[in-house]
Image (cartoon, rainbow, N blue to C red; front, side, top):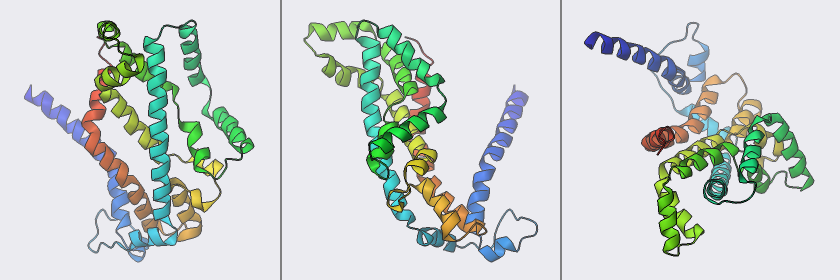
Amino acid sequence: MRVKKAIIYFFLTVWAVIVLFPFYWMVLSSIKSYASYAGERIPKFFTTSPTFENYQSAFTAVPLAKYFANTLIFTLATTALMVLVIIFAAYAFARIDFRGRELLFVGFLALMMIPNELVIITNFVTITDLNMRNTFLGLILPSVTSVFYIYLLKQNFEQVPDELYYAAKVDGTSDLKYLFVVMVPICKPTIITVIILKVIECWNSYVWPRLITDDPNYYLVSNGIQEIRENGFGRDNIPAMMAAVVAVSVPLIILFLIFRKKIMAGVSREGIKG
């Protein structure tokens, strides 16, 4: 038994090292000076003279702090609107009995089969026709819903016993009140998981912001890194690039470390059928 555990932990340790090594290398490169990095014929796995000048360069070469603020606005607004949309949609599909409900839901699921490239093209044409390019509204609107998250939350809502709903209706509780007083608190782990996943998705968003904005006033951090690479300190200054990537990645890592238990609880809950 001990030998089996030792073997399992050995392979888990090896796998953890493989997974974490790229992040370690990114951080290590970010604290090396450009001269030190360029002078290494054989890459070194440590440095005796760390420097934080690369981080200063990352925030001064382009207005990276402004890009952070834009990304924060985009992420919070998109996530808040999406949570409201998917809660109402999931509740309608899970609890409200209306004609054509199952057919409509199948249609929703069928949307997941459409290639994302086609959706982006349609959204681009729509936003352009509405003169919403280079606006926060143009960035946010195409991302305020998700068929997958609606499906995920619908499955979670359906696990809540029907007796609670019938008891609430006997007490004269409206559907809206029942949704936010009973359903949402019970399904809180899943909702928190969806929020965190959406925050990560928005923070890492690149293709759509790059397509819909060409005004630096509306650039997100993903655009900012590309801007640094093209018009900041150039493509050869790898340590400064790594510093910018670390600065962008740290908020997501902190978010995951804080809410990792909530994420695991929300994911594991989906595997339990009540």
